[in-house]
Length: 394
Ligand code: NI
Image 1: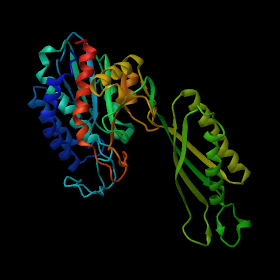
Image 2 (image 1 turned 180 degrees about the horizontal axis):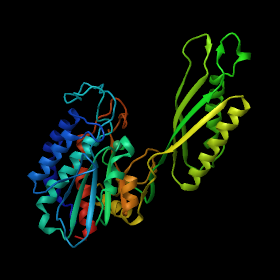
Image 3 (image 1 turned 90 degrees about the horizontal axis):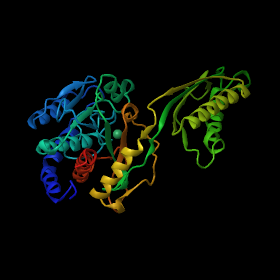
Image 4 (image 1 turned 30 degrees about the vertical axis):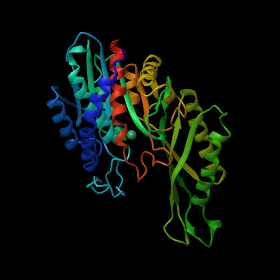
């Protein structure tokens, strides 16, 4: 008899309205990384109500153990708490009340899912032959290097055997699970280029070293790093996302600034792509008589799914959503996730829970019109409950 049976599903469904209310409350009160004070208080109050003794970690993070000090296995489940520094442009009744802050990645939903798991686990406490550690992580969106790294450094995964996390994904059909062993999300690098030329009068370009023209050539040349440098199976993204220079129409400026992002999935490809970027940037600058300053700062590492853990997610998903709704299509995704640090510390798996509404283009994560789909909360809870049961062999 599977653990995620009709009885458990009914319990989860009965809890769903309350979880939706919490999710919308969190949506209304979004908080940036390491500022999740109110969110943390909501999480703590819920956990205490359900028999846990929560503790702080990584400043605004919260941890709770189902069976503290249990000699059996410990399975950790992670949700992220923070919002994005972007405006809320929707007219939702629970729209953000904070200017320039909004839950546009669905971390409000991830938190609600894990709170649901906490409540259901409480009812099954006596049946579980081990510990479940709930990790409510601050600052996934990259503030000060991210909250996951800090949680790991502060011992959040000490004694943990395996760790799991999910992310909603509107690009996949609602309720579908996508998972695979190996790379799930990208290694990110921040790319910064300052082109130093010689400014002057717009009417006398011959006396200048135009940094705008040189930077434009650099942007174009960078397009060859992936398209001409890697084969079809290379897998990398190089995007210039900011080009800024000049102050008026008749002055050739002295500098131009470019900013962008690099996404890769394997160390050897990362090395190759970064080496080509250096050659292309400095070579193009030299050819055009300007000097380029290049910075490549590593962000989050690749989220690497442990094969055993990824197979467990696949097995559980087959039970929870059915085999027709589980696949590895579209993976890996070129986004970055600091769950990578947790999956480096102990074996783990990250999976996507589809949130695409049938028959329409659902706004994706970080889109101004994005909103977490509350109807997938029960599937998220069932997935985590199924994983706990699978890993404890019950
Ligand atoms: Ni996110």
